[in-house]
Image 1 (cartoon, rainbow, N blue to C red):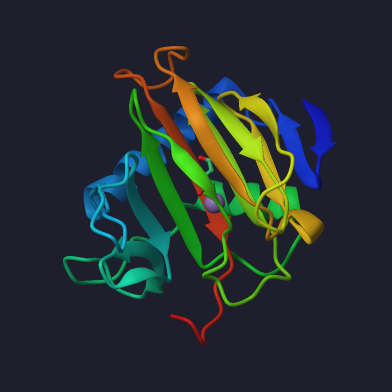
Image 2 (image 1 turned 90 degrees about the vertical axis):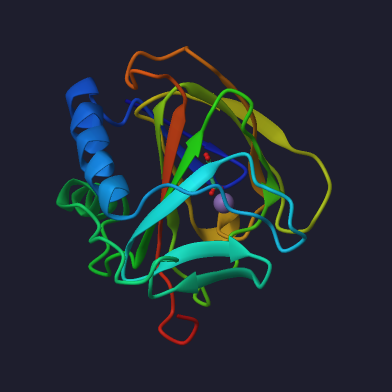
Length: 204
Ligand code: SIN
Ligand code: MN
């Protein structure tokens, strides 16, 4: 494991062993059985290139009504629970008693990317967002709390963890591209990213 900090983003390279990554993929398959991955659209009706689902008290949703957290899946019913291994990872990384309310799961296929954005739908920003990368490498770009300005990028590999807390909690970030087929973790390739978030009761 190697730890580095770039623009306030704490990056834990090689945090997860291969066997831990395999266990997480198994857990995530169970989540996706209960809450199938969907290709969301933006509020402007444009399809996003990632597919996503959630686990936890609330899940993150995007549709023509906008971005928000919802206590129910799009097809009704509660979101599946956040798997134990993922809650343990959060606790190990953050050393917080407070558990996350949402584990957002993003799947990047060959041409998927995620534009620069802030995570700002949570209503509470004193808690970090913890991101876990699995599968193919992803080129992660880190910017500033204000829009624009210089950015820096780093390739995230399977098993890397990024903590966006403190000054980086509301910083712009995104994924420019993935190296499709660079990892053997997922049989059909692609990249999975989990983000663990605390979400205020007042927003969902
Ligand atoms: C996100 O910002 O929600 C995802 C970041 C990533 O895929 O690394
Ligand atoms: Mn984000």
